[in-house]
Image (cartoon, rainbow, N blue to C red; front, side, top):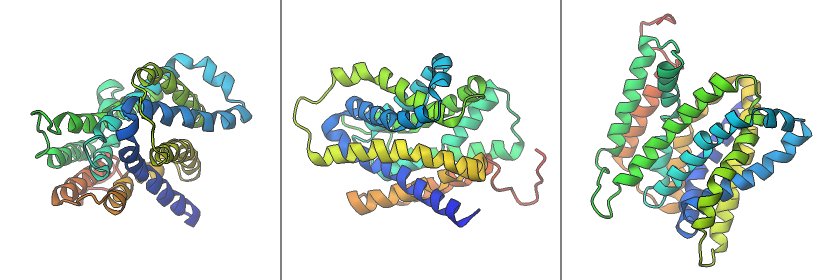
Length: 294
């Protein structure tokens, strides 16, 4: 990997890790629906001119039905779940839960598309899911005021990413990443608009919350997509997806640094188990003594 690619990878991980920080900062004043509508809407406005300049709009229009599903599953629903969780859970916790995204992608691909799943990768899936259990074990409190619903929202969000990835593979394999991203942001904006209008804050929103929202939309969503496209083109999808392992590092770091979140042994142990399992599930590392055949 070239030095520039490595720097891009680190920058992308830092940016995506920051998305959980900005959600924590903005959601108390905006609420989940309006905040996520602003996130995807402003991101769409960022990507739309680039897609137009590259002649992607006719392609987006031609595949609008499939892209609408991707917008709902890959952006609207999981973003809303994370925003709901951010009302009571820390940025570090959510970023660690998000690390299981590639695992859900593999599980859905195995169940739906019958993708081949060698035994070592299956073991990785099981280990990563065990890591989720370790992470949430003492937080599943469903009594009044408990964190149980927020925890379920945070660990469920990556499942929708996994479904969306396989939907894209099944129905949008001929559509480039920029068209998918732009179209899905527009679609997510339409899906979230009614909820955002119905729950728009009645009190004035502080400039700090607006600044966090703009950073979430323009930097952590719009610009991040562009960086990710560049990485895929330069180093390929397998290497690019390794950003998954760095996002929790920055998510935890930003939470501790800016929000004074506690770095608990449970978060560290859950993160370690999840990342080991995900690495095995993606085939990025091999169990000692194994070969490429599964």
